[in-house]
Length: 438
Ligand SMILES: O=C(O)C1=C[C@@H](OP(=O)(O)O)[C@@H](O)[C@H](O)C1
Ligand SMILES: C=C(OP(=O)(O)O)C(=O)O
Image (cartoon, rainbow, N blue to C red; front, top):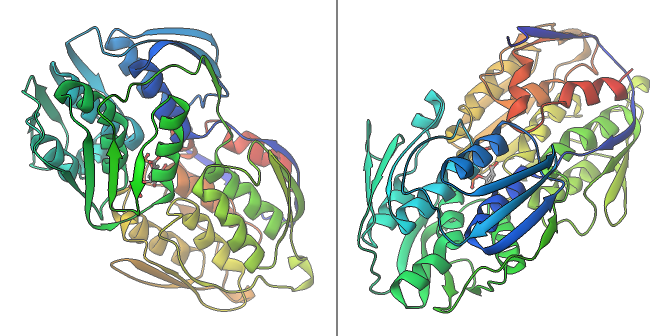
């Protein structure tokens, strides 16, 4: 049974220590890479959440050996292929599982059906399907062209020149092709050239992909952001063991708490050398008036004293490189000293929910004056007399729930509906949150 709501009282300070759960983006990449490599990989610091559970379950269904030691430690027995050539696979709403597995199954061949929750069937995958079909993969869309559920049947893979992929809707399509490029190279005995057509959004996630591929022995030749070359003899080798760093997007909520709640909030699990793009959200925190001390694998945030009438500095920023942490900035806008503008966030419309519409509606409920367009959101913070207590809809979007936990540093508390939706990436979020705020 899911908890129907959680009531949060108005609070004024936040301080303490947080140990981050593992990165979702790294966890799901590493699980797949470990399965595609030769040899066992022991993975520590794995995220244990809905998104990684569906990936682990899928790998087991596909016949991959998964040894579970504890919630954050598994050993994947990599065989370079999936033993089961026929399967029905449920992937919830996990983009980082759905897109890469589609590519892997289409390239390795077999009879598969991939589906997810209703919202996953509204999230586009057409650009990836088109790129895979251009190589001879056989994929059909069961309901609507360009959307899951998908049926995959054995095709004859061949490449004749660069494989083209669109990058404007999601970077996960390019990530999926990169991850399976060594398999394409093996099947076709050719170098694989991936070419991005048009704009590429969310670029730092491609960096995570390249970084993880290198950990498994495959170095990609990169020409800017539009051409990626994988040598014909590329092959994944298990690194033996791999430690996953903490989730930088999850860190954004605690950076925000240190900022609005004066801090100090110490965050263990990511630091100045993080390979995740969302660590750059630290720059937004600093620009808004926060101070951050960085270590190798930790950071500590302090902020101004909002109880003495201080305000955060307003921002006008392009958030294309940090689409997930950008939602945290939208929540922080409630405490700014002027209107805040989030630009270039069009991808929000095809994520867990239409996040531009959801943020617009829910921020307005607490008293902000909000306007939005196809790829932007503008927030005028409420005056202290304008704050309203509200029942916040979360739209089965973990980030909506986590973001609105930041909206109680004004004069009123609020109710967050369906708080258990945080399980997508951070099942224990509200337990950790409660240890920090007063
Ligand atoms: O590759 C990844 O791990 C991700 C890429 C981003 O998606 P888009 O590329 O669709 O923006 C991000 O929003 C998502 O949470 C994780
Ligand atoms: C967009 C997100 O998830 P997904 O990996 O399903 O795209 C997210 O976690 O904010």
